[in-house]
Length: 166
Image 1 (tube, rainbow, N blue to C red):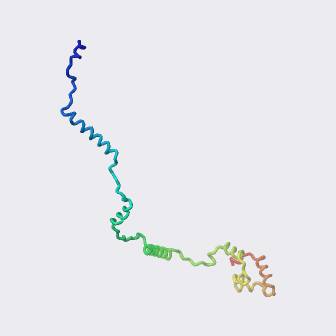
Image 2 (image 1 turned 120 degrees about the vertical axis):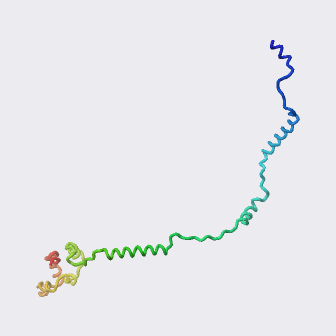
Image 3 (image 1 turned 90 degrees about the vertical axis):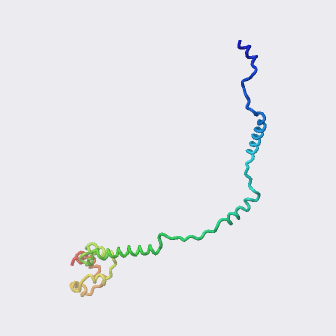
């Protein structure tokens, strides 16, 4: 039964809005124009634009005034700081150091012995280690021996420790 009713339908059930076909052509043409405009970038650079660009920029930029540079650390400040530090160190060194005079009694015997053995002492320098009384006790001088023989005798037969401790 339903099959018979399908042939007898006079309306399709679809409705077209009023004046749809009248505005259809204008709508399609506007879409085509939009696509044409979309393919064109729209931005064009004028001719010789980049040739004159640098001159335009330089003319529009105002020259700036030279700024004053203030140094954080100057040589003058550094010199003052060094002078103050040196004076403090000198003051501390003068007032808080123990100043004991250096005497022959304070020097170790081994140091003196090493000095005598390692240095090339002349006879006069070596004689300065003795007092005049010690030199008078040596009878070899009066007997007329040469200074070389005396020097050899002293180095061979006298202990340096005995000389230092006396």
